[in-house]
Length: 278
Ligand SMILES: O=P(O)(O)OC[C@H]1C[C@H](OP(=O)(O)OP(=O)(O)O)[C@H](O)[C@@H]1O
Image: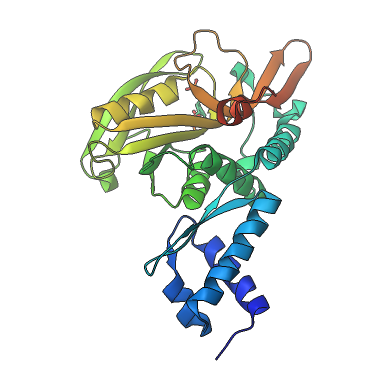
């Protein structure tokens, strides 16, 4: 059954979006639509140009008989800026104030529209980096890791705050957490990381940096490589911070005065990724 170009373009785009960062061969599309590979190549050029025009993804085409196409979801600088401005607007709410310099974010990391934006923003940051796995720590980092891993088409692993028989043998590290400077333990199943694995760490919030620092320690224990760390939001109060090379989408000033206020502004993502001051 020959399929018209307009129908092919819709279905090819759907298929590529549902299989991000996966090589889809010309042969697959050619057989799927009963069309010549030359027609499919023309279709892919149209899709590639369209994504470039709208700044919402990069389609790489691989020439030759074993060639095909790989769609990498990403935001252009303009679209990343718009997405981050939306996140800032969502966080910028005094009702999110929590004691101890924390910020209430649980509603946001439960919203599919927010997770879509955060995942694609993070995938943009690492799209040209060699990444094998995304790491986060339970609990609130999990939806962020799942979204980023989906857009990066990489597995993600969950660091646990306590021992679970269901994790099998684990590697554990002690770390200093939160403003109360408590010593806590985090652990990760031995089955998750292989030596030399390239790891991206993500989480929802950065305050003192103890949690991120703990995950960096775990990565060293596995002889794996830390590619980068990215959080949805970071506290602007970076006194005695235990990490200094984390990328944030949003920076939050929490004022614990008579008025409990939250003031959000863009984090260092644009500067770190696009080399652009906000
Ligand atoms: O930079 P730090 O000072 O280490 O704090 C940031 C930690 C603390 C908080 O997690 P919790 O609310 O403690 O744990 P959960 O995610 O399970 O709610 C947040 O999600 C980050 O993981």
